[in-house]
Image (cartoon, rainbow, N blue to C red; front, side, top):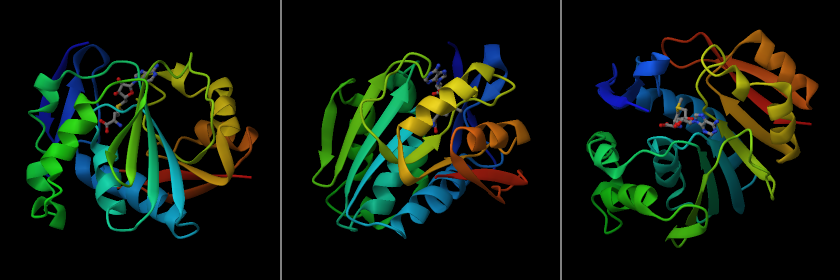
Length: 229
Ligand SMILES: C[S@@+](CC[C@H](N)C(=O)[O-])C[C@H]1O[C@@H](n2cnc3c(N)ncnc32)[C@H](O)[C@@H]1O
Protein backbone atom coordinates (compact mmCIF):
# COMPACT_ATOMS: atom_id res chain seq x y z
CA UNK A 1 0.00 0.00 0.00
CA UNK A 2 1.56 3.30 -1.09
CA UNK A 3 1.41 6.01 1.59
CA UNK A 4 2.84 9.51 1.41
CA UNK A 5 3.36 12.03 4.21
CA UNK A 6 1.29 15.21 4.03
CA UNK A 7 1.07 18.20 6.38
CA UNK A 8 -2.36 18.97 7.90
CA UNK A 9 -3.66 22.43 8.89
CA UNK A 10 -2.26 22.32 12.45
CA UNK A 11 1.20 21.55 11.05
CA UNK A 12 1.14 17.87 12.07
CA UNK A 13 1.74 15.09 9.59
CA UNK A 14 -0.73 12.56 8.29
CA UNK A 15 -0.56 9.97 5.53
CA UNK A 16 -2.33 9.90 2.19
CA UNK A 17 -3.25 6.52 0.71
CA UNK A 18 -3.31 6.89 -3.03
CA UNK A 19 -5.40 3.89 -4.04
CA UNK A 20 -8.09 4.74 -1.45
CA UNK A 21 -7.82 8.49 -2.08
CA UNK A 22 -8.03 8.84 1.71
CA UNK A 23 -6.03 10.33 4.59
CA UNK A 24 -5.18 8.75 7.95
CA UNK A 25 -6.45 11.87 9.79
CA UNK A 26 -8.46 15.02 9.26
CA UNK A 27 -6.67 17.42 6.92
CA UNK A 28 -7.79 20.18 9.34
CA UNK A 29 -5.25 18.88 11.86
CA UNK A 30 -4.09 15.38 12.75
CA UNK A 31 -2.96 16.08 16.33
CA UNK A 32 -5.95 18.37 16.84
CA UNK A 33 -8.38 15.63 15.72
CA UNK A 34 -6.74 12.85 17.74
CA UNK A 35 -6.72 14.99 20.87
CA UNK A 36 -10.35 15.99 20.43
CA UNK A 37 -11.85 12.59 19.51
CA UNK A 38 -9.74 10.04 21.33
CA UNK A 39 -8.08 11.84 24.24
CA UNK A 40 -10.56 14.52 25.31
CA UNK A 41 -13.81 12.71 24.43
CA UNK A 42 -12.69 9.14 25.19
CA UNK A 43 -9.72 8.80 27.52
CA UNK A 44 -10.62 11.73 29.80
CA UNK A 45 -14.23 10.53 29.98
CA UNK A 46 -13.14 7.08 31.19
CA UNK A 47 -10.53 8.53 33.54
CA UNK A 48 -13.23 10.64 35.20
CA UNK A 49 -14.96 7.37 36.18
CA UNK A 50 -12.12 5.09 37.09
CA UNK A 51 -8.47 5.60 37.77
CA UNK A 52 -6.77 2.36 38.72
CA UNK A 53 -6.08 0.42 35.56
CA UNK A 54 -7.26 0.89 32.00
CA UNK A 55 -7.41 -1.50 29.08
CA UNK A 56 -7.59 0.31 25.77
CA UNK A 57 -8.07 -1.09 22.26
CA UNK A 58 -7.24 0.90 19.17
CA UNK A 59 -8.62 -0.22 15.83
CA UNK A 60 -5.97 0.88 13.33
CA UNK A 61 -2.59 1.62 15.03
CA UNK A 62 -1.21 3.36 11.92
CA UNK A 63 1.13 6.24 12.81
CA UNK A 64 0.97 5.47 16.55
CA UNK A 65 -0.27 9.01 17.23
CA UNK A 66 -3.13 7.90 19.51
CA UNK A 67 -0.86 5.60 21.53
CA UNK A 68 1.66 8.44 21.91
CA UNK A 69 -0.99 10.96 23.03
CA UNK A 70 -2.39 8.39 25.47
CA UNK A 71 1.09 7.84 26.91
CA UNK A 72 1.54 11.60 27.40
CA UNK A 73 -1.91 12.08 28.95
CA UNK A 74 -1.54 9.24 31.45
CA UNK A 75 2.10 9.87 32.35
CA UNK A 76 2.30 10.90 36.00
CA UNK A 77 -1.25 9.72 36.77
CA UNK A 78 -0.04 6.53 38.38
CA UNK A 79 -2.42 4.33 36.39
CA UNK A 80 -1.51 1.09 34.68
CA UNK A 81 -2.36 1.37 30.96
CA UNK A 82 -2.65 -1.78 28.85
CA UNK A 83 -2.89 -0.55 25.29
CA UNK A 84 -3.79 -3.07 22.56
CA UNK A 85 -3.47 -1.86 18.99
CA UNK A 86 -4.79 -3.74 16.00
CA UNK A 87 -3.23 -3.11 12.61
CA UNK A 88 -3.49 -5.02 9.36
CA UNK A 89 -0.92 -3.01 7.39
CA UNK A 90 1.94 -1.82 9.66
CA UNK A 91 4.05 1.11 8.53
CA UNK A 92 7.81 0.74 8.10
CA UNK A 93 10.19 2.63 10.39
CA UNK A 94 11.66 4.56 7.47
CA UNK A 95 8.29 6.27 7.21
CA UNK A 96 7.44 6.57 10.94
CA UNK A 97 10.88 8.14 11.62
CA UNK A 98 9.87 11.05 9.40
CA UNK A 99 6.63 11.87 11.27
CA UNK A 100 6.86 15.23 13.03
CA UNK A 101 4.69 14.55 16.11
CA UNK A 102 7.50 14.74 18.66
CA UNK A 103 8.70 18.11 17.32
CA UNK A 104 5.20 19.54 17.74
CA UNK A 105 4.23 18.03 21.07
CA UNK A 106 5.66 20.48 23.50
CA UNK A 107 5.20 18.61 26.75
CA UNK A 108 7.17 18.40 29.95
CA UNK A 109 8.13 14.93 28.84
CA UNK A 110 10.37 16.35 26.15
CA UNK A 111 12.52 17.88 28.87
CA UNK A 112 12.45 14.93 31.25
CA UNK A 113 14.65 11.85 31.35
CA UNK A 114 11.74 9.93 29.80
CA UNK A 115 12.56 11.08 26.29
CA UNK A 116 9.43 11.20 24.17
CA UNK A 117 11.27 10.47 20.94
CA UNK A 118 12.56 7.23 22.44
CA UNK A 119 9.05 6.30 23.55
CA UNK A 120 7.63 6.94 20.06
CA UNK A 121 10.42 4.90 18.46
CA UNK A 122 9.79 2.05 20.90
CA UNK A 123 6.05 2.08 20.15
CA UNK A 124 6.90 1.44 16.51
CA UNK A 125 9.98 -0.75 16.84
CA UNK A 126 8.65 -3.14 19.50
CA UNK A 127 7.70 -6.66 18.55
CA UNK A 128 4.22 -7.51 17.29
CA UNK A 129 1.81 -9.96 18.85
CA UNK A 130 3.05 -9.88 22.44
CA UNK A 131 2.66 -7.42 25.32
CA UNK A 132 5.68 -5.11 25.63
CA UNK A 133 6.53 -2.89 28.58
CA UNK A 134 7.22 0.64 27.35
CA UNK A 135 7.45 2.11 30.86
CA UNK A 136 6.52 1.13 34.41
CA UNK A 137 2.95 2.14 33.76
CA UNK A 138 2.42 1.61 30.02
CA UNK A 139 2.26 -1.70 28.14
CA UNK A 140 1.53 -2.04 24.47
CA UNK A 141 0.34 -5.14 22.65
CA UNK A 142 0.42 -4.55 18.91
CA UNK A 143 -1.64 -7.14 17.09
CA UNK A 144 -1.00 -7.75 13.41
CA UNK A 145 -4.35 -8.97 12.16
CA UNK A 146 -7.50 -7.72 10.49
CA UNK A 147 -10.59 -6.59 12.35
CA UNK A 148 -12.56 -9.15 10.36
CA UNK A 149 -10.42 -12.09 11.54
CA UNK A 150 -9.39 -11.21 15.09
CA UNK A 151 -10.98 -12.99 18.05
CA UNK A 152 -10.67 -10.82 21.17
CA UNK A 153 -9.61 -12.75 24.26
CA UNK A 154 -10.21 -9.95 26.76
CA UNK A 155 -12.51 -7.02 27.45
CA UNK A 156 -11.67 -3.34 27.16
CA UNK A 157 -12.63 -0.16 29.03
CA UNK A 158 -12.08 2.08 26.03
CA UNK A 159 -12.08 1.57 22.26
CA UNK A 160 -10.50 4.04 19.86
CA UNK A 161 -12.33 3.17 16.64
CA UNK A 162 -10.07 4.75 14.02
CA UNK A 163 -10.71 2.79 10.84
CA UNK A 164 -10.98 4.43 7.45
CA UNK A 165 -14.48 5.84 6.90
CA UNK A 166 -17.54 3.72 6.04
CA UNK A 167 -17.57 5.02 2.45
CA UNK A 168 -14.00 3.74 1.96
CA UNK A 169 -14.04 0.54 4.03
CA UNK A 170 -17.69 -0.47 4.65
CA UNK A 171 -16.54 -3.92 5.81
CA UNK A 172 -15.11 -2.32 9.01
CA UNK A 173 -18.47 -0.79 10.03
CA UNK A 174 -20.89 -3.73 9.84
CA UNK A 175 -23.23 -5.03 12.52
CA UNK A 176 -21.18 -8.23 12.75
CA UNK A 177 -17.99 -6.24 13.46
CA UNK A 178 -19.65 -3.97 16.03
CA UNK A 179 -21.21 -7.00 17.70
CA UNK A 180 -17.74 -8.46 18.15
CA UNK A 181 -16.51 -5.15 19.56
CA UNK A 182 -19.52 -4.83 21.88
CA UNK A 183 -18.76 -8.27 23.29
CA UNK A 184 -15.18 -7.15 23.94
CA UNK A 185 -16.26 -3.94 25.73
CA UNK A 186 -16.77 -3.86 29.52
CA UNK A 187 -20.11 -2.61 30.90
CA UNK A 188 -19.97 1.21 30.98
CA UNK A 189 -16.93 0.99 28.73
CA UNK A 190 -16.80 3.45 25.91
CA UNK A 191 -16.11 3.56 22.16
CA UNK A 192 -15.16 6.80 20.45
CA UNK A 193 -14.93 7.51 16.75
CA UNK A 194 -14.61 10.56 14.55
CA UNK A 195 -17.48 9.22 12.43
CA UNK A 196 -21.01 10.57 13.00
CA UNK A 197 -23.04 8.72 10.38
CA UNK A 198 -26.66 7.91 11.31
CA UNK A 199 -26.21 4.35 10.06
CA UNK A 200 -23.21 3.81 12.37
CA UNK A 201 -25.15 5.21 15.36
CA UNK A 202 -28.06 2.86 14.62
CA UNK A 203 -25.77 -0.17 14.34
CA UNK A 204 -23.95 0.68 17.59
CA UNK A 205 -27.30 1.09 19.34
CA UNK A 206 -28.48 -2.27 18.01
CA UNK A 207 -25.46 -4.12 19.42
CA UNK A 208 -25.83 -2.66 22.91
CA UNK A 209 -24.38 0.84 23.12
CA UNK A 210 -26.02 4.10 24.19
CA UNK A 211 -25.08 6.82 21.74
CA UNK A 212 -23.91 10.32 22.52
CA UNK A 213 -23.42 12.73 19.62
CA UNK A 214 -20.68 15.15 20.60
CA UNK A 215 -19.27 18.15 18.84
CA UNK A 216 -16.71 17.04 16.29
CA UNK A 217 -13.16 18.34 15.87
CA UNK A 218 -12.66 21.45 13.68
CA UNK A 219 -13.93 20.70 10.18
CA UNK A 220 -16.48 18.14 11.44
CA UNK A 221 -19.86 18.86 12.92
CA UNK A 222 -20.24 15.75 15.09
CA UNK A 223 -18.53 12.66 16.45
CA UNK A 224 -19.79 9.59 18.34
CA UNK A 225 -19.20 8.46 21.89
CA UNK A 226 -20.92 5.15 22.54
CA UNK A 227 -21.32 3.77 26.08
CA UNK A 228 -21.77 0.01 26.58
CA UNK A 229 -25.05 -0.73 28.34
C1 LIG B 1 -7.74 6.11 9.47
S1 LIG B 1 -6.24 5.18 9.61
C2 LIG B 1 -5.87 5.60 11.31
C3 LIG B 1 -4.60 5.05 11.83
C4 LIG B 1 -4.13 5.49 13.22
N1 LIG B 1 -5.13 5.44 14.25
C5 LIG B 1 -3.37 6.78 13.20
O1 LIG B 1 -3.70 7.68 13.98
O2 LIG B 1 -2.43 6.88 12.43
C6 LIG B 1 -6.90 3.50 9.60
C7 LIG B 1 -5.93 2.40 9.95
O3 LIG B 1 -6.61 1.13 9.90
C8 LIG B 1 -5.75 0.16 9.31
N2 LIG B 1 -6.59 -0.90 8.70
C9 LIG B 1 -7.11 -0.92 7.47
N3 LIG B 1 -7.83 -2.05 7.27
C10 LIG B 1 -7.77 -2.75 8.43
C11 LIG B 1 -8.32 -4.01 8.85
N4 LIG B 1 -9.07 -4.74 8.04
N5 LIG B 1 -8.05 -4.44 10.10
C12 LIG B 1 -7.27 -3.67 10.94
N6 LIG B 1 -6.72 -2.48 10.58
C13 LIG B 1 -6.96 -2.02 9.35
C14 LIG B 1 -4.98 0.98 8.29
O4 LIG B 1 -3.80 0.32 7.90
C15 LIG B 1 -4.73 2.27 9.05
O5 LIG B 1 -3.57 2.18 9.82
